[in-house]
Length: 324
Image: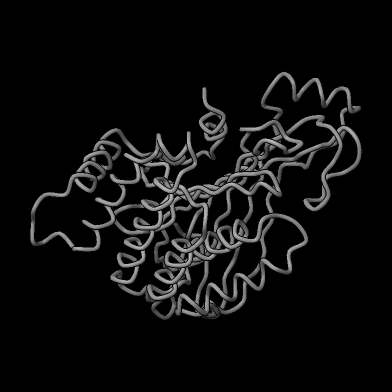
């Protein structure tokens, strides 16, 4: 079983999509990938779907040779995603209501054989990985909100990890539990909607980073902002245009997230901080479905192992905190 599929089996209890819902999603994806000649179909949605097919076709060449044939389709699909995002209606939060979103997270607890890993200096050797599943429920109203984290007990996913944990003296792992954090009033997302200004801002932040490839950090920053439900259509369009300008982004074609939703995947590798980040985008709405990272060759973590996943539920309007 693929490492990413194994990790996704650790998702939180809830109401998984029914067979009928999965069938409807599959039919919707197929219609998006082969759009009919229908004047009612939005032009931007058709363009994004066609670009997705082009990106999938170029996948074999891009992953083997690293040539520009994989990069250009990614940029084209991202530009079309920007147009699709721009055409979406702006989200409105009526008085007395709350925007609710559930995020499924799986994080990795890494232990080095020698020294501690703080994300900036590379540890020596590898001891074990533990994974912890986390459900993040967020309610945000005009005046207040609440963020609830429900952490499950960490697990050691492989026999090698368990042996490493035993050899390290059975160190304590983070406990299970629930944490609630009150939120203040909803505020607009402070990001420029001009692509050039936004790219320049991300570049300045990347230049101040102590490690890693600057362009890969721009990719990560844009992905984080796309995950923010406060982003306006204009801001989301600018974020996709920023991603289209980042060198080294590759389209991976169709992928499925932890909730069974199909999307178009874009990935980028950071050789200086050996990892690969992937964004999964809904080709019909341009919404970000999932973000994930894998260890890359040169990392103290074995290459290919998934280190983090966030799967984003569709935001909805509810009448009170605690309702879903």
